[in-house]
Image (cartoon, rainbow, N blue to C red):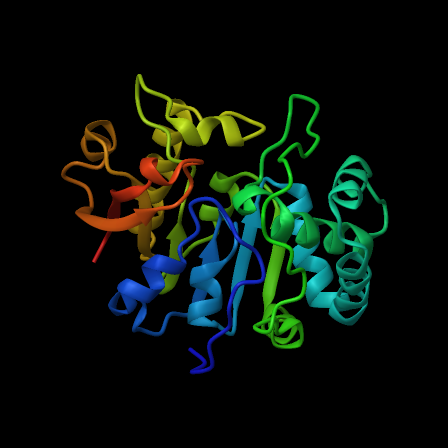
Length: 269
């Protein structure tokens, strides 16, 4: 693990910056390879800074953005500067309505919308179009941006779009598998569901459990975050170690609806 730390260049609902800040003990070990099948903002990846990694997600725009930062970060940064200069409410909605074909423009648009939309939320409609309204943040380029360092780190990563099960299947002995799926629970699909183009169903939660059991048998080190709910606890009962952790909730639109919530850590060590 490299001692230098990187701040993720994306905000993400359910992101794990809070976890790496509050529980660094979970990541103080060296592993052969880092594998993350639900990438999001990559907070854990950028905290650990592994030399080798497999990073995947079903979100094609997200994966295209990481690939462009790895391969053409300078061009992405230049395009992002153009968004910064032009930013306004009208420009935001005009940009949101357009879908560029160029990889660099796709990445710059994705980062621009992520930084200026409401709460950094990623949500699409039934047609797959990003539909989050503009937020209150107006800063497009951050002092903490280190796209060059992120690019250098990402050169050691395989960045792929795909289903989580196929990615987990590649985890073997001494790999570190960090898993942060959408938080769905049995009989009670919670608020995170409406932010996903494709429903992460209870059947997917069961499929995920089975994939992690197989990875455990192959010798992978596993850390998963999930909903702190009885159905999830029962799903992993007698299989892996479980621990409730507290975090602040900032996703609600009203400040009065925000507060402390718990999440479940599941691990095999």
